[in-house]
Amino acid sequence: MNVMIKYISAFLLFVALTFTSSAQQVYQLSQYLQNLYVLNSATAGLHDYTEVNLSYRKQWVGINNSPTTYYVSVNTPIGKRIEINPESSSVRISSPTAYNSVTRKSYHAVGGYLAQDAYGPYAMLIGSLSYTFHLPLRKDLSISFSPSVGYRNISFDQSKAKVEFSGDPTYDAYLGTRTSTAQMDINAAFWLYHPKFFVGYSSAQLVQDRLKFNDQITLEDLKTHHNLIAGYNYKMTRNLTLTPSVLLRYVNQAPFAFDLNFRLDYQNLYWAGLSYRNSNSLVAMVGLYLSNTLRFGYAFDLGLTSIQTRNAGSHEVMIGLNLVNKEKAIF
Image (cartoon, rainbow, N blue to C red):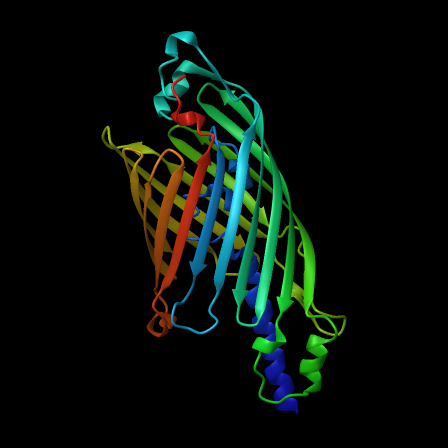
């Protein structure tokens, strides 16, 4: 029985680590550069359209019950954010140079997302709502602030769990009479942006709630996650724009992590990217704009650890909708 208790204790520790990383997983999607809102809620309303994104990610293809993530996110600006001068009315606002011929105003934005992350017998439902305020600092430089509130529900499906011995008291105590638990969360973010560069900070799990299914079995507290991202838009030619960026992640008592990203855009129609994730994986990404309204992106993660020999990598697909797209209109 002592061996079984040790086995269950180790299992519970693994669950705690899994939940801690899974709680952050929605912020570690490979295509966050194509949907910055899931990484940083202060980016809500950056564009003059309502942005809707849907994504599906399958991690470690070939391994049974490997992590699977779905999400849908929406964000939209509220209020008039620019004033058009009559003499520059033929300039498209989607062009970076147009920022020199318009007057930008402070404005608001709202957004939210709903995600589900499943791994083996565990499933986590995550929801978040945010408010964002954009403040121009000068003609071509603005900053935005965003508080957000989140909800997380973690459930355990006993029918998908396999144990060596049924009826073990430690395992029964772990299950208790509840098979789900929920926590609330509050987070904050900011975004400093210019036509040529951006810098942003976002947090996750500021409340640091405790994972538990009952009063007898208590797992360790969730840790606050800090994300810092910075990038630069370099106009190589009239048609090509290169955007190098770096994402830094910090969690107390966890190894420091970072992503190095490179994205190349051609005529605002096609893009390709490459990302290196801190000795963990190499990510290749491609995408295109099918119309002024519809976007598509795909990412493939190749693991750089020993587990890569046991799976066929990770796949991520994203579809984006730019609704009421004023940026493509002629003013």
